[in-house]
Image 1 (cartoon, rainbow, N blue to C red):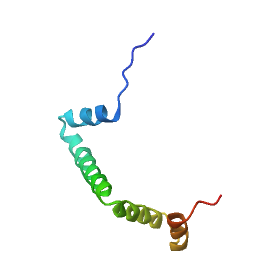
Image 2: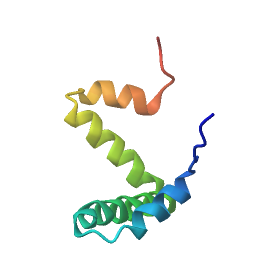
Image 3: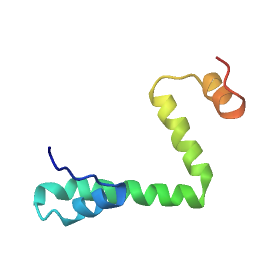
Length: 76
């Protein structure tokens, strides 16, 4: 029988914060940036919608396709 530890998201984030290695700093900065962006999106949901649109554009989706997904029910 093996013993293992389960982590929840807050625990994982605290673990990452505690890593003293300089190699962890770029990841910590990225994590802080993403966290800040998501907090802004909670305060202003239009920012999340624009991020979604930009991701779909990057994936090569047409404006028509994006508009259909953003304004109407999904048709399968």
